[in-house]
Length: 279
Image (tube, rainbow, N blue to C red; front, side, top):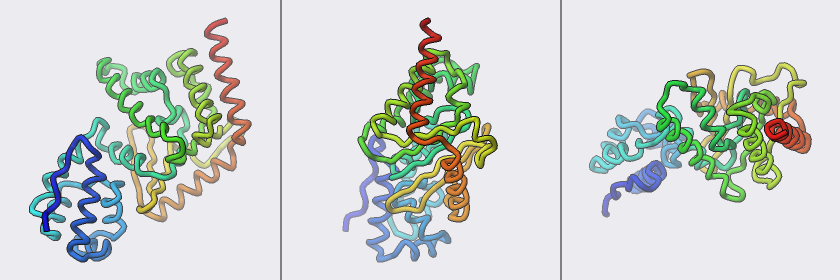
């Protein structure tokens, strides 16, 4: 039987790498659990590699080549799958977003990346690194905009975003930028493309005051949770951690305004920004 072909780096490298892993494993007659046992990892870890929701590290690729007798295929093509325009820690998150069926997200002080406009994303990136060259800021902004294109699909993934009122009232990039950004979010909600709620100031103390949170669910892989603070981040698949943070998100939803109230607030603030920009 012919061996797997080398990956085309211009396609979807991680998804193709996962598909070839599944092909090689089944050719050996191994289940995910059996392969995991030989490599001292869980069967769910193998499943995440096959689903493309976890990056294959070079050392692990070499072990796969040895166990599955694939002639160095995974070691060679692991390099192609690692190429990305995103920071290494976030590249796994971006790939996971493209595979997710449902994304639940909360960010305390800014509009989530998947809902940002170019001008808003540019202002956020500039604030992160005030001394970075303009061309680098543009590259970062374009990378963020590339992520938002997943919302061009009419239904997938399901995106449920809880926006903090602080993010809506924090003037990022100027009033015109904020008016455009909030109108964009409202438009997505009005088209029923996203589920959007606002966590108001009146909610007081809440379950996620310490940082941002993103929960991702998949058809054929265990759920993941990504959370971050200032210059810190973490991606977890531990079931206990995922369960705990899903409860945190549920508490946020319980404290948030209804979808109708949230949309009314976002649209009202957008009008306020636009009116104050052009009296």
